[in-house]
Image (tube, helix red, strand yellow):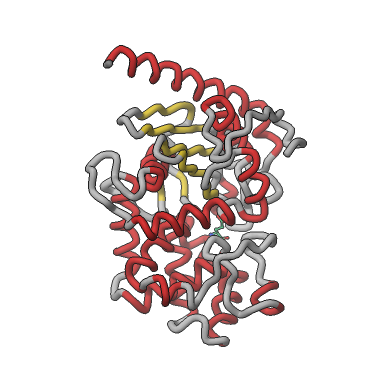
Length: 327
Ligand code: GLU
């Protein structure tokens, strides 16, 4: 049995290396985020990935040890925290569950459609649920870090202070959304407090191994692969993974669902995490982003792995090129 497992792991390791080799020539097609000045310092040549398997395997490749800020990936943790602290009814009285088709930082539907953000994976939605956490806890950032540490299987989870300050100083669009939502009664706490918690959570540091662990917790229906502890209740897992599948990759969510076929969440720090149901957690890091804010290299690594390992939820053995021209 041990021999068979190790042969499987070797094959997986080789597939992971191939996936990185497949993606590497194309990462130059993207650019690092610069609207948060501190993120502009990222190295566009970085590329790393990690796969954690339900049977205890952990395979890392490339720049896997490099810490980066979670950015939007943190929105999934804020959602879990808000659902735990404030409950389903409260959270979904503040935010919807529908994809927007707009960019992640769009303000337009808050004014033209409804003052309630359409889902928790866009900036406005994450700020609204940050407000729920603030109303429900005296130490929401502390609770966020504690939960993030457990989900990532990492003791010393912390915030990148320079990125936080950079977001705090440059995040006027996010601040505008917070004030608008406060004015319309969506936010029941101080607008500055909500946006400050949002900036702090986005600035949480992690590497791909941490995020693969977190992805595996969700793929495992909420159970930690390292401690066996149930970290997320099953009804919350269902909501979070469904929203990741429909809204997790910004306005590229539909295309990603067709090409990779797994619940995923990206962040403008260059990370992507995906959950292969009951099988594995996968995370990638490549800071050069495509026009929708998703990591160019990460998308290719995940699509390659999905095809080679048969991870697509709805199967269908279709082969795509790296150019992204086929759906
Ligand atoms: N902190 C970033 C922002 O507010 C997060 C964006 C993202 O990763 O999508 O713009």
